[in-house]
Image 1 (cartoon, rainbow, N blue to C red):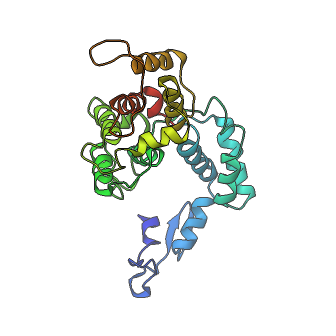
Image 2: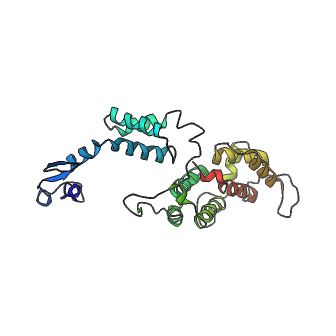
Image 3: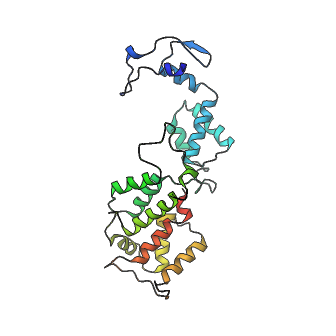
Length: 266
């Protein structure tokens, strides 16, 4: 309550209305005086827990959901050394060996926005924005409307029996253009031609690079190659890239990749 008094009088424009500001003394962290918002923030940042708290949040958001104490302490020290320069500290974090390590790779579950935007950018074409917003909302992340001031819990809370199906179905909509207007029917196939990927094996490699950084487990890759060889009636066929009409095998391949466990991770 004492701390809240220091933030009185702040209007929607972020400026303080002196007539609405509580000018009386407040006692925060054992210090008493006519504290204002800037002074309150200084007191908070002076607490030993403050740099560790912020370092932990940065590491959790950008690197790994469970950072180590050593990592938290290191970046807490960097925040203090840079006088709370978040830009410099975050640049160091995102260019470190830790960020590119196997430990951090695919350690985080993509949020609905990360999943939807990432997939749309990878596939290309003109996106149907209302469809994208509706998709993230159904997955549990309504853009600009978090559930509370803390924001979304993220990570494991993004995945449940309902949302995982929605994530898979979004991949289906994106690959088949059902209920959306992402790309012309031929654009995906033209991308394969530009990459000289005209066989089933080459198509798997192409979309593996596009959607999974080319890092596909051998078992999954072999299953996808076999999928490209089998026709609807179970007959083994040679895959043929068709430009004059949508190729269902290609779109099925995209859907399978976007429904893989690896694609849910970042």
